[in-house]
Length: 183
Image (cartoon, rainbow, N blue to C red; front, top):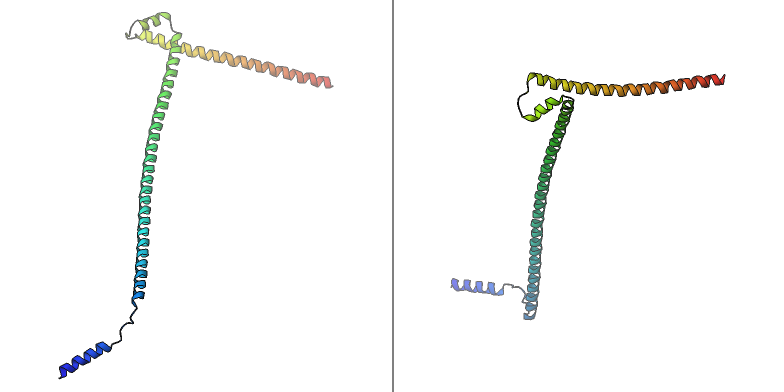
């Protein structure tokens, strides 16, 4: 029967087919142990790699947070410094205005020092309006003050000029004397 012959051929073919060499049982155990050892070692390396990477990522996150914190602190310090500068500028401006006002008041009060006594008494009595006559007296008082200051300044300059002329005369006389003594 052809069917049985075919079956036999198939059996012979598969039966006579060369197979992988058989490894003795002792060597199979050694190979399994090596493979297990290599697998274990590889797994340990993989675990160590991922742990190291996890630590590096944590350090990176901490570094980013530190940088962010430093930036925010620096921004806060700059904001505070800017506020302090604004306050300082405002105080300086206020002080300068106060000094200017004080100078103006002192100049006005200096002029009022030369006004008549009854006018001062009237101004202390109450805040009533000044008449045109009182205004003229006050302005004349300022003019008197300014003219007095001008006269004092002029007198000082005249005094300095006279000193300079005297020293000039003395030096010219000395030169004449020296010139005559040489002859």
